[in-house]
Length: 601
Image 1: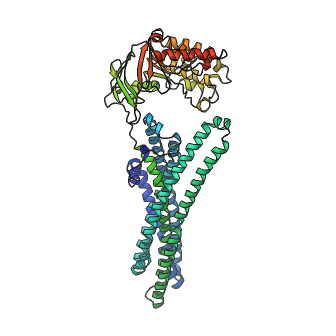
Image 2: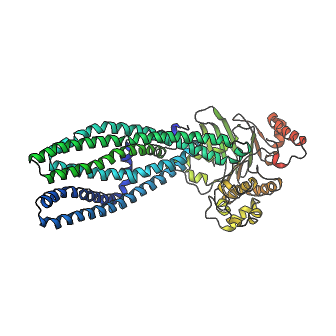
């Protein structure tokens, strides 16, 4: 449903090798201990089958009493070793498996958090959450369950085969002549499961996406009475997942009748041929029963391996999706030898800058401007004029298509991303708050700030009074995306965060859009103090916010069509004059229109 070329994977045969060589290699000592324990486990599993020959020949037929104690002791010892070896191998493999998955999750999050902003615009967040949870869980089962079972069952199978060929080469050849007949259908079943599993994971990602959208937009859903519509959408995805899961289950289950039939066929032939040998006296009953026991026991790990092939194919489908994200290489990175600086003054230059999203038509065309340290400049224009895009180029959320963006005459691409972005504070109309305390949200990015500094920033943003009115004050949990606060309160916390960062460059994208008139005046005063001797770029739709700027840039279709002060533009820019006239007529149309509903500039 939601596919992206960013997440395609060229192949998956390398996944097991990658898990073992990259993630399992640091745990080689534990793996060697586990492997040794599996050897003991496999040998201990074979032991009782070999001892059956002694039980039948020496005890039941020869009635040799001296063999009773040794045989029973050996059987007890075999099962004791089997239990102990199983414990050691399971503990070691579980530790390594869980550690591998934890490291993969850690690397996966690092890869996601370092991805370009364009990556998140092209891939729905629900898709990424699904990869981090559902796909990683599948991978967890592959590492902790399937792969460990492959090793244990393979060793057990090999030792049983050795025992069978040791006891009777002819009978062993007869027993395993049916084995090649199982390989082809089992392999085909595995491929079908792999394909179906990939489809299941994609549908599951679609379900997560729809659920995320529904929960985030619950207010809109209720206000437009769309509950039934959304329930129908979810039901269709759930039904699609059910059908694919059921299909995978039917395909996976097909290995059991195949292996049961072939195992039964081999056993029947062995009983017929081996029984004839016993009757003719060319084979002892003990050796024959020991062989039959080994034959019956060897088909258990063989059947598990056949079933595990299907499980492994299913889990490797999830691994493909996980490693596709891990292998994603961001295009916006720090240079190998970044510039170092003590402190930036904040002199900004756009030198013939052009930009386009993903090869589309240019959003910005030949932008050239300069902003001196301490200046406040504003950008106005209709929606889609390129104002926010221009601001996004400064902290390198995107890179220019042509031209350069300079700070203090240094290309922003020559700084490390960390050093560059620590010099920039951003306040957007889209406020982001985490499900944490007010104190933590204000101090986000300034973890070393003292409580006094946090309070001072809140006071500057006109947020201190409403914070202290809350039951837990600064320790109040704000909820997901600040759902427990009003829009104006959330915006003021965002401004407090920028005040606390105290960066030399400020990017303000509608910083007062959600404030009432009184709060806006208080915040504007605080921002005026903060902007002193700092470079500030403001995007605003309200005339009151921009008219005192040193320079106002009027943008239209990605170009700067006029610039100057408010008074200059009223006489030189028809577009700016039209924007101001639109606001004035809107104010005259309704005397009750308050500041929160000022028309758009």
